[in-house]
Length: 425
Ligand SMILES: Cc1ncc(COP(=O)(O)O)c(C=O)c1O
Image (cartoon, rainbow, N blue to C red; front, side, top):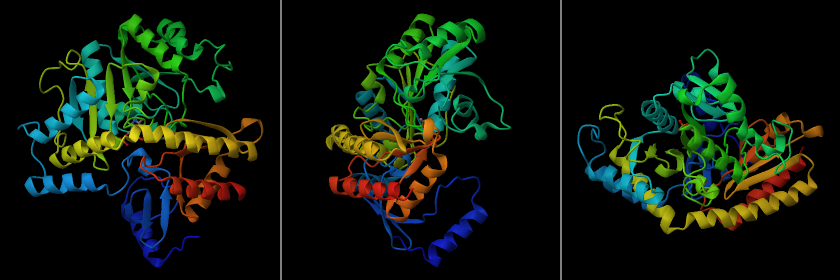
């Protein structure tokens, strides 16, 4: 069991006085980290099954990335990349294009900014003023992205929204249409044409459909492959752009660099962030030269192309590729899913286990599949007290998204702690 000392208590009390608007599921004051282990200021260590919300795919303190950032820091930290050229951001963009097959990149600093750029680009290219997104979607918290977001309803209170119509995602464990896959014929996707385009929004006024390949914050929901194929078809037949938000699912977390590759679907615009910076703030919006033909000055920012972020991002992508992190994610993910499915047989509170690679969700339920919300909170807290970092998602899901470099020993120990926590319910 971890020991909490006055040191962390003092920081937490100062934090609560000066830091605005954060939600923290438990108390943890970090000090440093190595690989897949985080150490707190009280000297406790934790195996990290959350990777700082799917950011640290390469693990903490990666030597290659540290060296690349330090070398760049010696030369120059920042230049006004919207005013001058510099090779490092160009190399990063070239690498992203080579890894994805897209032709142009807009660089920014976060996920929500990558989404804002995608929205602005789609509005400009298609001239439509509205978009379609999905229930339980999370795309960020700036006002454009927030209009698309539906998973965190309280964040939307009192804020204006763009016109976004939300449609049903393929959440097969709790089918919104009360149907069964595959007999359903992916009706949830078809509703866009059957209902939304007929009654709510004309395709002409729809700039884009925005979708997460696997919903993250909404509850780690993995749709059947046909779902994304159907959405792609609807976009093609109605002349609407498809925007894939790969911010949480990208970066080899699901095995492929872009999660959409698992569905054999290619979006028109892709948003990436989180893991591609290796822990340094970095966002990227990618598309074809044709779509990204917006006139110069249509969009820009101060820190996009920041030299440290570019050096860190490039080193991160190279490390991910050379370390074959995608293959490792699949192998380790299958191992964890197998064990979680065994636990599901033993613990009735585990209603569903789903995932792809190391993007795994475990949905906790009570009788009649009622979400086990309080129980989830207790399990997450008990695990942290015993040295395992877990984070919630959706109504009653625990997400398992460790660094892709996590060792078998750490996985086994983490799963043991998780089982201990389950037994305490
Ligand atoms: C799918 C998805 N899109 C967008 C975002 C927003 O990213 P950021 O918090 O960097 O703005 C997130 C963050 O969790 C996300 O998971």
